[in-house]
Amino acid sequence: MATERQSLAFRTLRSPTVRRLLILVLLIVAYQVWLTVQAGGKVDPAVGDERDMRGRFSADVELGFKPERYHILKMQKHGRIAGTDGNVVHLRGVAPAGVDALAREYWIERILPPEDER
Image 1: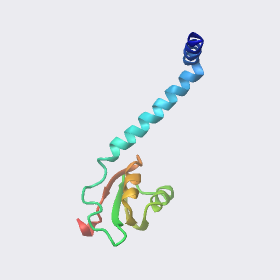
Image 2: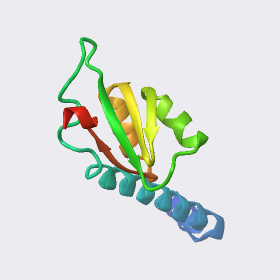
Image 3: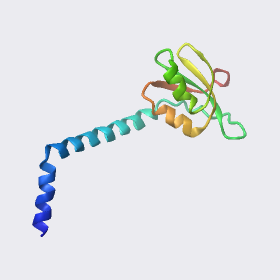
């Protein structure tokens, strides 16, 4: 009985469809690991030093290009948009979890404290 199970497992792994699915899963996991690793270097250590009563703060999000509607809408999920200056979007009312989520976006270059707080 154990050999039947073992042969079924080996036959399953030899299937081209199963191998393609495993490769796809590995690629997705590798991409998620890469997003997590690169996110750590994007956030300035001073971000979040000046918090309000609810624990929220302001942040400037720097992109490598002028933000478009898609980017503004994605950032709006994590804070209020206070305006843009070229490639920088000014956010207010950002929670720490919002900064973590924004840092994982591959199109965001840096997250900094607002100019007046630096």
